[in-house]
Length: 392
Image 1 (spheres, rainbow, N blue to C red):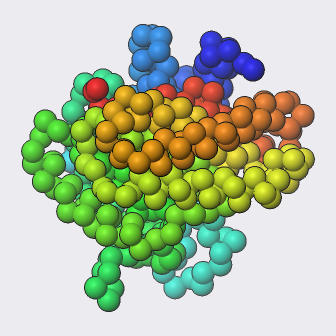
Image 2 (cartoon, rainbow, N blue to C red; image 1 turned 120 degrees about the vertical axis):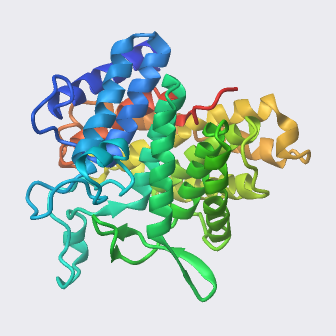
Image 3 (cartoon, helix red, strand yellow; image 1 turned 180 degrees about the vertical axis):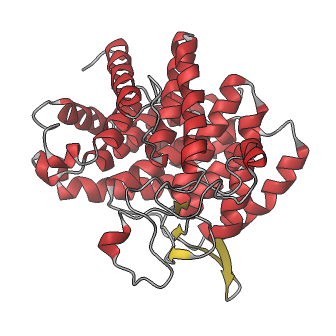
């Protein structure tokens, strides 16, 4: 087993390589930005700063935020449109860089309005994903809490308001969500709803609600958004056999426990539902024996997402031990957490497999190398990502 010091050192090496190859450090004239990867990267750098006190890591996190906003908050270079995707003037856009959302950062332009939908091609086309935006809200919230600069929290609130207004809609008296929207958020590109998008939204909004506790106006704004998401969460089954989805459930469970322990919004039954679904998913995934397959049949970043969630189980247990009265008196929840702990060795197995050089030459790694390396760094040093950022 790798020591915490060795794991942290390896995580920092991965993040140094990421900074160099994507034009973050040294700064490149055309940095290569991708929203999901960059959200994890910001959290990693902030975590390194908190661990070491080295201001260079904080500088990398904040420089990356600026690069993301100036790259993905603006129209693509290969489009006829230019400027901020929000439509704001240059100066106003600098003050509100995410009020129009953020592009995914895909390699190909978004699908034209009259162009037919093709599922395989859509994966490589630009636009906006709600679940990527929630990751960025979380990264901005962490930046605000770590640096003490409320501007980052204000930006997170702005993107939350915009994303919620454009991705959600009412039909038949029920709230629903689009999975993917156009760059300018004027039309859905994929109208179906992501299985965990409402849960991601609720947990992220709740963390932001707590982080913005000094500003009552921000809290009032987010109350309706949280109510909408709480209504949708009850209509969606959480259980999945997808490793990235299971990891997301485990990460959300740790953040829900953290929110409850720190005085954030409490949603009766949510913690129980999320941990039960995570347990069911782990049982399904284990029966498939996917971790026994060779690298060419395994997708690195999806497995690493599971490993990150497994890292959150220990934090989840700590919150319950600290304030057990918040989690009921029946003993059912501590028992479930104990059962979840039985799967923690899977985290080390996934790490060790993808740290092997022979597995990193597989196309399932090299085809998604940046996202795999950054998420593996998160797995090795997870505190920067898993913490919600509010003070104890």
